[in-house]
Length: 252
Ligand code: PEP
Image (cartoon, rainbow, N blue to C red; front, side, top):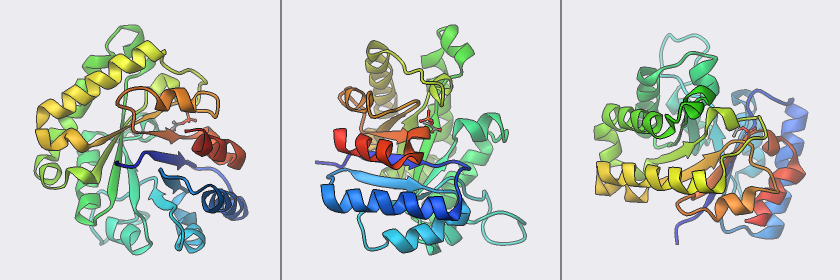
């Protein structure tokens, strides 16, 4: 059976010391509990290497929060896909709502980043989801369809060749960091819609995993994971607190 994924996005938080301490606590739990799911920790780029040093002999996978849209060269401040690969990165986020709405990245940036990552054999966790306004105007499915169509159209060749390099994370923007979560009925309907939309694009895409992200806590993790078509969770705030992240990993 294919593994569920629990990924913790630390965003731009923490110090070297706190990142090491958090990693050690997660590491201890992973060794003790022998989770069958894939645990991914996603620290700020500057802490990737020290974190990798701690987890390199364990089952924990390393994720990056961002990648340059360009190959190596004169792009001051950027970190390329090959540098991430060289540093032991297994996964990378693309399309996170904070990159869309605060950094103003668009589909063309995402498409270049997806290519750079697949070229370097790094799995893409592609985030998408509607804003509060779209949700209130009942446009959730319309927005999801638009975002997914663009992703699959812009990266058609790469994704058809390497469908297993893509993981999709549905993260309603209004649920990120707010304590709000879609109702169980909404989630059932949305995830069925995402699964059908993806499968209808090409049957090769049927094995692409679907994650949910947005205000996941130890209290709601297990019911979220019981939702049909949810193959894992992307966790922000709760992944910064070792006990909460470990409790989430343990409850599912
Ligand atoms: C996120 O930013 O990807 C996220 C899901 O955040 P939170 O869990 O804090 O809502």
